[in-house]
Length: 329
Image (tube, rainbow, N blue to C red; front, side, top):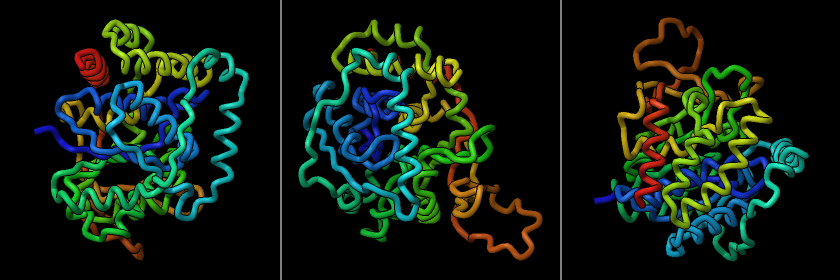
């Protein structure tokens, strides 16, 4: 039977200078016969919450999947001030480079989320109703997940697994990674929950790349979902190359879904992980192998279950999986 998944995300497909990786992750889940996408939940993050809702709904409609529900959730973090992050989003979106590269690219269609501001309750209720059956893929800030844990204290025991894309242990130039940076307290709560967790950090996703020739392979597969993904991904690849100086765009969020389909894509190890919430290291995860600490005099070292941390990925195999899955759907 297919694995049931909930994807909690902050999509930005069609939004200028905004990463399209959430949309690629959702598209991969929709296209795979091995996954059953139960619902999509939205958190404020890469895009404002209601923009994220419109992006998700536009993608699902383009894919011919109107039956997949979309629920919005938290509009702000547990404690993190929103203004610096909102200013950062606006500056990128309004840049001359973004205007040029996204010229003619369809933005998300207007959608009113109405009363559906209950993402945490939806997550909690679905997992409680089917204990051990649902995998939660969290590819945005972890605010909704922290709220869901508060609503359903047994969620950590009832969820099959939580796959998290977030955190930067040691990535040159990054004091923060966006998902943990926008809500460090939520990240700390979730990682301390005792749930079975696989953490996909920026340290690994920063080594991935989807390039324009890969997109050409994908475009050859046809279909409404593929057409939409190609149109909205192409400007992000060009932006990543021309503005960020990267070789293609990073596959942060798709990796969190792809490892469910092919666990051998990645290398992993067990670590006890905590998230810092003060000073220049605010939002930074720190981790150690169980039983490996040599010196921690006077430190309040948390006694908690380890999580599985992804430490390496085969990028060629990842790209092939994405292309093959989407073109065969």
